[in-house]
Image (cartoon, rainbow, N blue to C red; front, side, top):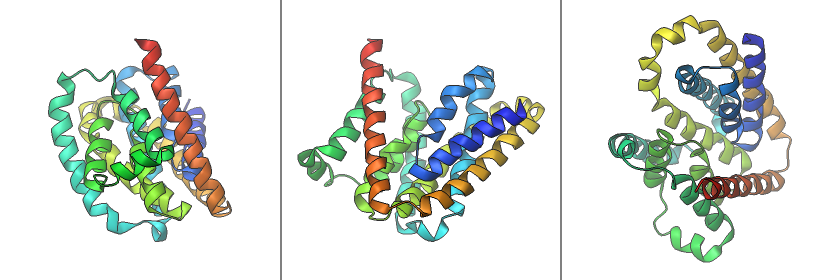
Length: 238
């Protein structure tokens, strides 16, 4: 199973390294077939920390470091606030709100122009990291804003990787809670981490050869598909 899940980690990390997102969500969708619920979140989180951190490491020169302080402060506040509040609140409609926000921000200029007055990386950091403790697919929140703020596809993907690394690190308390089970699955975790690093490396090399405008367009299209899927999933569950 180590080889199979290592290959899965490689494939999903490769996807994320090319387009900037999607790999983690795909991995989370497949892992329940192989892992128990108690191991699912921590092993997925450890793999994603490795995937995002290595993706950022292979593109350090493209990271927009000036955005990091605001996002980091927001992440800390988001972890504290959402960690205390959201566990006691219904979260059914959160994916719906995220989906609508992404679609309107990308394609409806009046909303995009209006939201820019309030859009900053303190708020994005708080929402992405805070909501990430409760629901999946929060990475596109920052990616949506980065595609508007940055012109280079490599800056968008590399900076997003740093942001997502910080967001996944917020799950460390969950990892510690099941540390005994993680130790008994150390070979599996190592295999998946190695696969994630290799996927980041290969994906980064591929991304460098892709036209900037085409990849930015692809990112927006994939974000839109993800947003529509979020909206539909909430609507059909009502």
